[in-house]
Image 1 (tube, rainbow, N blue to C red):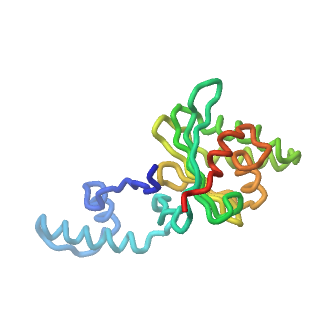
Image 2 (cartoon, one colour):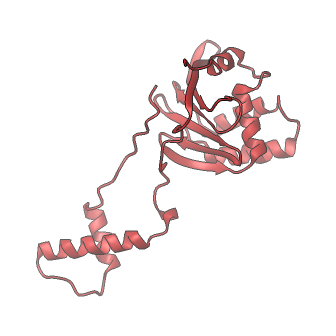
Image 3 (cartoon, one colour):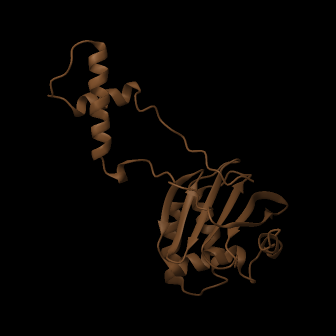
Length: 207
């Protein structure tokens, strides 16, 4: 399973972009003629992009989060005999401590709210803090997208919390170390409800 992420791109010189650029430079003198207008629009667009806040741009991953990590094991999660997703783990020397990355390749359509709800049910095996679980459930409901067969979600576990990507696009971050630990316990804790998948993920890579 490849860890490369294919990111969609837009045509910065398409009609909509040219119109926006021309509008951004409205009131400035321009060259006459079609070529002169297009050249002016390009210059204005570049200036507009240079001054635009990063938050206004699509939240795509700037680098491969698995870089510098080893690919450990992979396995499948099934519910009532149906294949729900395939899972692959990247980690350092200790696959149960951050940094690590878990990739889920979905085989069925699932609503993001259902993913959040199922995650909370699993996390109750590791904590009885209902206030925290309620807060985490609300945060996950905002972060997790609806998925369909062929989609994948990356969970990136760092000491400071967790970041999530959907098909290469960052969907959100939950900057809470306790949340991150409990969330990844779903797959990596000995008390997991899917011990066979855990064993597959923790299989040491070939030397």
